[in-house]
Length: 224
Length: 119
Image 1 (spheres, each protein chain N blue to C red):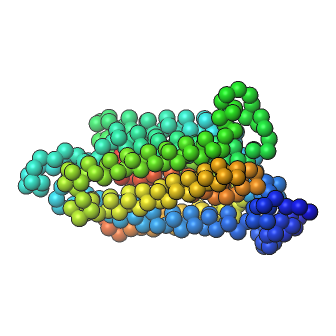
Image 2 (tube, one colour; image 1 turned 180 degrees about the vertical axis):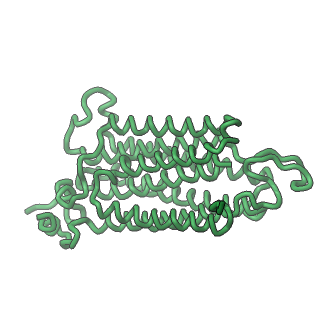
């Protein structure tokens, strides 16, 4: 019986037969859905209601703006950062697969690429680097917005945009730190199938951060 | 029985399977295809953004929302393994998500961004 197997390894039996940590991360992700939906709702409610510029999708001319300003959102740059975050999710599932199959040498086949696929250290670091790259893009975007006169206090767009994307960026930062911690553990003692659950939990968090960005990219950046 | 240093705190892979947590996950090739599909949808999203006639049309917003929803569902189903996982996890995720989306829609009606035509 499932719970017997769990108890045999020092875990108390659970009524659901599921590990509490995984139930907890899904419950946490459910609550995070509500948090981000509230932030997205606020952005959408105030969308198009800024009295002064800069505006996200249209140019701003005097008297609304002191000087002529172009539309502030840089879609090409954000598209690249979106692609980077999507690829980080791919790297994360490959990190989890490498950890889960650590006790099955050759599970990925043969050749140099199979060697790469079997390296959990490589994929954990790749995910962290891609996450940090996304944060770099966000830092560039925030800095350029401030230089163009948009701060969190400028108008309703600035307030809701910086709050929403700032919260998301904070979550990505936590995810990168979490990944680097896992990488350090992997380097120090190695991660194996017995650690699959802790990597799975971090992967769920990371993918959630990715799906939130999928929604933000469409609702904030693409829909005018 | 001798335990490994972390066997008390971390159940083995076999234990995960017995707890209904780990089922057959997609393979590398499937993950690669999922990543390709996500990339293609993202490219299409950005591409339509630069077609003025399409942006002006009534299809623009529904098309973008649909593509975003497909990407969202693919990541949740395949990368987060919700398609393969226990139904309790599905309930824990979809329940709050549905409540959140319904709240968002109600708020948009309340603040006049959405309206139902009476005639």
